[in-house]
Image 1: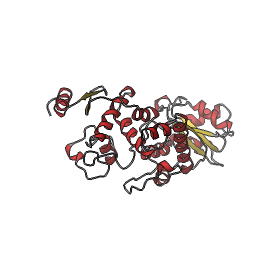
Image 2: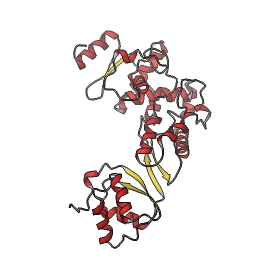
Image 3: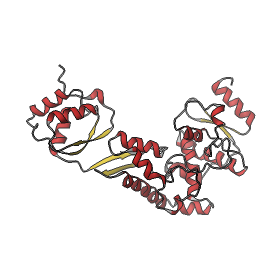
Image 4: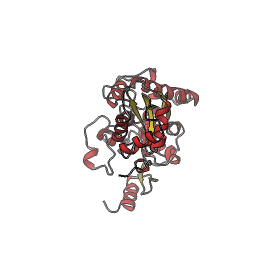
Length: 314
């Protein structure tokens, strides 16, 4: 048997919430940790607790355990008793569904309940929309940040906290005033910023990409963003096909002029600011280089040549 106390091979760096119920034995706890891929072998964990004389001191409660922690560290946490709060990060560009799945993957709650809560949650007037094609009214208004949740917090309260943070940050940066000056509604601003967030791999390109999209809107040219197709498909596809661009869906910016019905992800503050301070150029097209930077062009002919340069003859 391998009784090593290390769980380094399991390290993902992800925190996970486990619940130790009253009356659970050390063996029960060891099996629970093993099932969640937090310890390599239940035996090694039990030996560690016994060796340290703490097997009777492991307390019931909710604990945040990070994958990769050693048996010794886990025994330490469980013998000290309850943790009160847990950290959760929403990355920039995450959708309602991705955020929900991350909540569930980290043992914090149910993806389904979070998704349900996001459908019609509109505590601020700018979130309201009467467009029946918007699936989640909270989409786009979950601020990408790191949150501290109270243990046992329900999914609705998590969502409320994230949406409140969006409102706080917007006001802190005077975004509503800026948007009003430019005669742009907050909902449209976030909608456009979400597209910019998803297209730009490098933040320094966000103002230029925003400029291209805004210029297209000005001349009634479809935005034609692959990111809206990805949203419809619900997965990140390496290559969007011609057939994909013909999907009949209100979010398809190849088929429908103007902005999609609602934001397609949670934009960060830099993408929101890029829309309010776009780089004004004559560019109407861009294509991603292999390294994630974009090549910008003014005419369709130049665009096709850029595609051929990067991806070979089409």
